[in-house]
Image 1 (cartoon, rainbow, N blue to C red):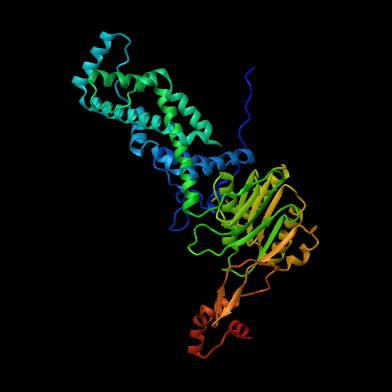
Image 2 (cartoon, helix red, strand yellow; image 1 turned 60 degrees about the vertical axis):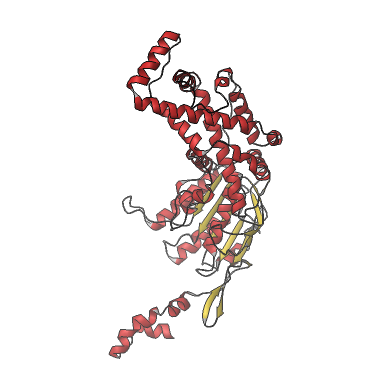
Length: 467
């Protein structure tokens, strides 16, 4: 019986998490994360990069292989400029996919008759074949030069087998018939012979070479993104979920404020408090983005970072109700928590983030639901959890949660009569209540009271607000 190969472990990312982290779709005018990291020079390389970002590995050994490849590329970056140009690669792929007449005859007489027919009666097809043969030959010539570079001898990680496969394909006897010089000056007969070779006899070989070029292009793009964005390569550990880092920031910000992060088996839950606009949601997104990029094998936006890979990454930041399906906002929140609970109950290694959950119900229900969820998750060694909330009273109850909850907060400072946010993470629980302050500063009460002042009346609500 043939040996059964286990499928590689992939980090589970559901549609909602992909949207929350803006991995393939942006909710603003800026780029999504894929566009932010895409420095590929071929269309096929961009597709290969997207496939990687859709399926991040969840095994430490696999992640380290990618890291080793990226580190090698960074150290020998000039070698990879010898990869085929975008024009040669993309044009070769177009040539291999086009439906063009092919002279596929084994006999000399049949070949000559077929060649004459193409040359004399199908001018557009003939010139498409001519251009395609030239691009494919140029790509193969470039790959020969690329793989022959002495500097590639020390390549490691994932790149080593890719390079080995490329060399084997290039060494195929039939492919040796592709000359090392420009083919534009060849006779019609020799050009059509090369077309027969490339598009019929060695079609699978050429397609495999293209796939390898695209995978290399994707790896080079990941290396370039790591350097250009100032990311640091994380340390990958084995074992139960844990994440720690210093100088964590969100890569989209022009002037980010770096913060630490620490989640492990001693502190499985980070309970995050602070007023609106202080930085809670940005911090959650920064953490999840760094962890996601770390699973890809790329550098991450931090001064230092280390983690043990997990199997599922969940976020619950931007939820909405579903009028057509009859799902209320609170039910949408409950279903989101259920998805996380199912993964945890199945024993999967999970990291989950929830930004001010249970807003769709009353304060008492929200408090009780939050406490019940936090107490249960704090006992599960296979789960790390970030939970932001305005229910600061939860901290009094969380002290009894087996010491697994770490409380942190952001705060606002008053400067010149206005609120100022420094976006610094602090230990403890925020006691700030700024809702009424923000409404006053924005002049909302003045707008609503202006008509009453004009008529000389004062509403009960206005009297209460002023007291």
